[in-house]
Figure 1 (cartoon, helix red, strand yellow):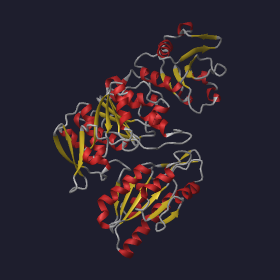
Figure 2 (figure 1 turned 90 degrees about the horizontal axis):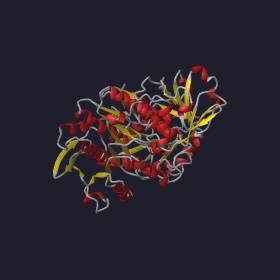
Figure 3 (figure 1 turned 45 degrees about the horizontal axis):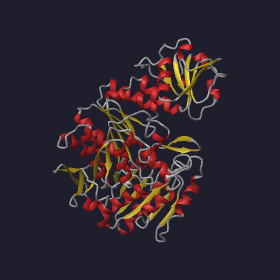
Figure 4 (figure 1 turned 60 degrees about the horizontal axis):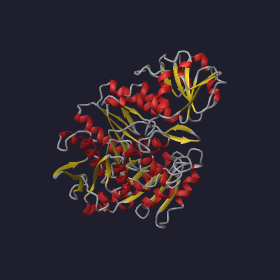
Amino acid sequence: MPEESNRSGLCLASAVELLAQHGLLREIIAGDTWTLDAHDLPHSETPFTAITYDTREVRPGSLLFVKGRFEPEFLDNIDDKGLACYVAETDYEDRTSAPGLIVNDVHKAMSLLSAEFYGRPQDSLTVVGITGTKGKTTTNYFTHAILNAYSDGHAAMMSSIAVCLDGHTWEPAHLTTPESLDAFRMMRTAVDNGMKYLVMEVSSQAYKVHRVHGLTFDVGAFLNISPDHISPIEHPTFEDYFHCKRQIITNSRAMVIGADSDHLGLLMQEATRHDVTVTTFGIDAADGGHESQTVVDVIMTPDPSRKTGFDLTYGGVTESFELDMLGEFNFLNAASAVALAMRAGVPFDDPAMRAIERVQVPGRMERFVGGDGLHVYVDFAHNYLSTKALVDEMLRVYGERNPRITLVAGTTGGKAIDRREGIVKGALGRAESFIFTLDDPNFEDPRKICEEMASFVSDESAKVQIIVDREQAIVTAIREAHESVDHDGRFNIVLVIGKGHETRNIIDGEAVHWPGDATIVRRELGLD
């Protein structure tokens, strides 16, 4: 239900003024009255009691945003619920007597008005936004851990996995970046809970559909970029995807940028154009391969003697760290989090930086070990870059044991079509067994998706299976790995990728409950 939290006294008149100020208002329509002056209508100074984008939540005094897959029939009998006003890109005077604020872009309008309704909670927080093709969630967790330690539990977080608004209580998340109304409501809750910091992931879609319109981050991060989310319903081209991603630079007061990122020159030009101060992080130029003229502020140096150890150097001072999380690629995520924390005010040598050493992220490099030494990893890897990084890490850590790697993977239907080849390419020549299975097929036939992925396995020595039932696919992978251990004594690794922590599959447009990859793995390994 909508919250009674109109901290600014937002009303018809002030909403009109704000929308006009940002060039979004076309006109106000209330029956036969078409006007630009809210005072032409009664009750223009009466504060709204609630805001929502769900007609089922309308109650007396509500402001309703009409967006998305909206059917006019949703407004039938809405006046009986007490609708005070609606914001839309078309008028619905035939459905309601409530005045309509007709705007050029309802998503932009919703973001601006939601922030105002909840009293601009972002102004009471140090807000950190993180984007990048890979590493957003882990960097989010690392950064939150540092800021929470530094502020004695007064840091909030919004991620693709979970939401924490009081520094210690976690609830499941539903979108990488929430709808603007929900985001500002959660920020309001965080402020009311006494939070000082908020860390959040920022997806390309967040800028594409204006979920963060009007929000300026105190510190933003651009971790890296590679082709992803390219499809008719997401981004039509890589250029569009990259353009949306880098909007975080123009909407941040300071930036942390990966020195190893592709198209680094353009990112730095964008920051210079908008007078945004940049801190870079990365592997030292002698080892990293990034643009040699770029000064790396926070330098990460892996320690070959430690599988999870690395050094960070800043301003001539070096600190050594040891992560609980496996994954050399997480060393750079940790470096970016340290850089973000410094930009947010944490000294480099503060003990709070050590909080990254205790972080575990559900569904990210989550390791399970069977009684016979079989290692199973559940990970969210879902494209070429993340799959390659995962397999690279397996070989870095276990390569001397000549591991037999089995990959259990599927991919989404109806979007990001390039992932089908990318996932396979990321493991090709290193994985000895591929099992293709269901993963959010939506309206596509999951078997056809699997068959398409299987067609990209060019390694004739690799074993390829299609088992659409995801639970059976995981069970088969683990049992065959057990048999391999018994037969030839080889060290086996099973990588179950794509869903990470998720507990649903999108099938025919509906979210169907899924117990979760980790649940199936634990049960099959006898770890429950």
